Length: 285
Image (cartoon, rainbow, N blue to C red; front, side, top):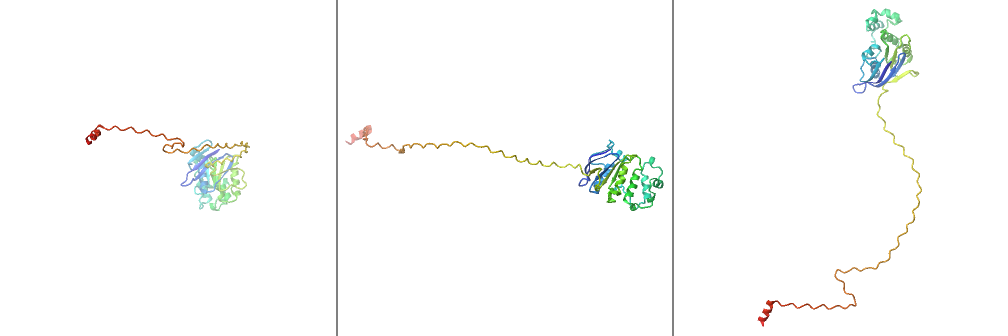
């Protein structure tokens, strides 16, 4: 089984491949949708062990070693990577691809026997650009499976050659359901077919989003007003009894009350003449 957890590849500015998670089992066709061709190709390269991810976990049959994943997988028709050149003939393409298979599996480097065994003799003399979309996919997947070590098939954007899913979907379904050779087949496409009900995923389905702010608590219902008992009427304080007015006292002593005779002041005692003054008086006499 192919297991991918938060696979991500850094780009120059934005992520070349945003965080993506998926699973593909043997005998199953998984379609992965992605809007940009760069993202689709990056995912196809990573799933087939041709590009090392920046983050995340990629495992095939319980191994995470990139070399083993690359040997067990085949990348099919990736634009700008291994798509066949348009000036090649089918015969030349077959000869070229067979030379890449390990020697113990490929046999003689002759395209004619292989084309005959795999029923491609009718298109052997055509240019690659002349092939219909369905026939092109049949040829390229057959060449990928010429290596018996291939158990994982990764097809890059097969729907770019035809808007009709019938041109590529039946072929991939037949490969995935072949009981004689159980494969895990992953097709990275621009959009999922309208009638597709099988396994599917979307590029960027594991992007971590910042947590949303918590919604404000709904205001609690107002408590019912409790009846307030009326307070007893407070009687106003009794009027204070009038106090007799007190005339302010003068700064100096108050005058004696009327009707009271004034007492005569005691005459001052005569001042004794000093001795010197007495002598002067005598002299004057």
